[in-house]
Length: 401
Image 1 (cartoon, helix red, strand yellow):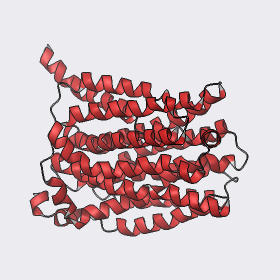
Image 2 (image 1 turned 90 degrees about the horizontal axis):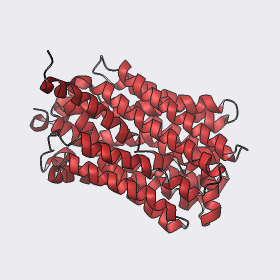
Image 3 (image 1 turned 180 degrees about the horizontal axis):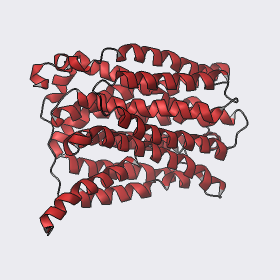
């Protein structure tokens, strides 16, 4: 006969999995939603494409900067309270877009959302490492997939609402509602779960290791294409005659494909300890997609987007797993993954601005897609350093012991 305590213990992993899914679905809609309606936003606000690139650049930059601050904050106030506060600010940032009919307010909402997501993204990998120690790859893949799925929902919802007669401010503000659901779920499901807080001073210790900086560089270089695509893929194809709903569908296809790739690739890589072959495969897929977007955008646009998206999703998930692999202690591995995302997101924030400048000079984004081939090549070279047998040496005995 199953006792009530046994049932409660059995239900916790399921409840925690549901919670991670609900939270992850809210981490990208605010970034993906403006893309398909960017032309209308530009027309109503008078903002140039260069200024509108801040809608992607600033949140990505803040995701990076915030990741450095998140482990000490988590150590001070705890994971549950930190997640509740971050979700409250993310909900506020989305809701304030209802009043964002001028450029200043719109940019400020992007800042608020980016800072909120920074903490959430820093806390979740350590949570996975601690609570799903025997299935880190699978749970990381699921988490990454739900992030991408959320981006698809945001990209698909906004043009539908706008074409149905709603203003673009209403279409963007609606995204506050699922964040409210995530906050309520966190308050209910996280109350009975205890998490290990990262030790004080750990961030400075990790930053003293060269390997942490290598991880940041690879994460930023190999994931920088996502920020470019989420910002400029829709305007790129609208310049080729696509409507906002058609280009929104293309972004949704991108995000759904990323969701599939984020699940499949970590599962394929789960039986080995060397992540390098899989990261190189992801780099090759990205290179294929960006080359197609640059040189033959109208030949097979869905294929270019899909193969690039699988590579991007796999890169994101595998980089998280790679960082977590470096340290056996979840209380240390989680902050390392947070720092990797911190430096990586700062680097990944730069491409949308560069693409905006390229567009201003050439009236096309094609040169920007070509630029990413160089970024991917550098990342592929750096990946060679991540041989698993060298993890303890790279991190040092005081961290890896």
